[in-house]
Image (cartoon, rainbow, N blue to C red):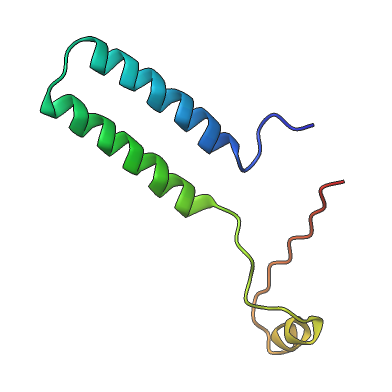
Length: 82
């Protein structure tokens, strides 16, 4: 079992966001503290959107072979949960 995987950013980010919320809100409520939490939450969301795993538009082996035959660079990533 891997400790660091594609969900690590979400888990560590949420833990960090909750810790920041506790620290900032415990010291008093203010607009800038809420703004800091909102910026942290948006940064976490932006980081997840930037690195989340997505499916490629190439669905068939023949499309990949055609791209390789044209001389286009092709990155193949093969993975399995087992």
